[in-house]
Amino acid sequence: DVSGITVLRGPLYTLSDVSFSQKLFVAQDASFNQNLSIGQDVSINRSLYVVNRALFSSDVSINGFTKHNNSVSINKDISSSFALDVSGITVLRGPLYTLSDVSFSQKLFVTQDASFNQNLSVGQDVSINRSLYVVNRALFSNDVSINGFTKLNNSVSINKDISSSFALDVSGITVLRGPLYTLSDVSFSQKLF
Image 1: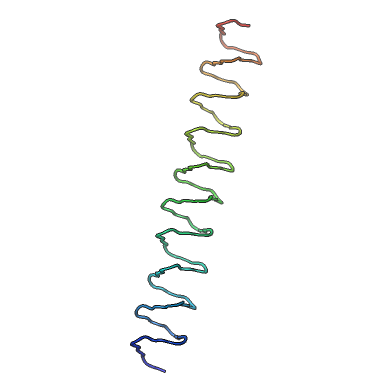
Image 2: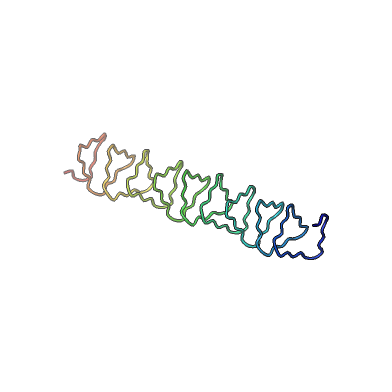
């Protein structure tokens, strides 16, 4: 039983457990050769350095900025209540599923096929640098302007009038199944049968 200050000028070896009823102050480094078990909270006022892995069996809450100097591997889902801000390139090696709308403030580049299982709505112009293939019908609710040659490999059905500002050149047989009305003269360069 020592009621005053005890100074040990050499190592202290104990053959059993050591219990401190109050605080333990260590002026220099403290080295533990085996496991360290702490029953309550641990407060670290400065940096925490871990040489090997740090394993947390429950949730980890970080209230400030988190910086990772190397790769981050996450084996399960990521849930975020706020925005995800990525300043570099984001590579997704699997499918991307969204439960709500997706907004791109700039261009979207797709190096392979893009499949849309439902409707695709585009607010402005669409530019296609190569061919456009349509498996079913193509419906246009307004005018269609074709600046180049138009080739139709099958029949054409037109439910209303045809207006042409230039000549109509037909290289095959023309069959008119109704009357032919002309508003001006008709000229035939060969015989009329």
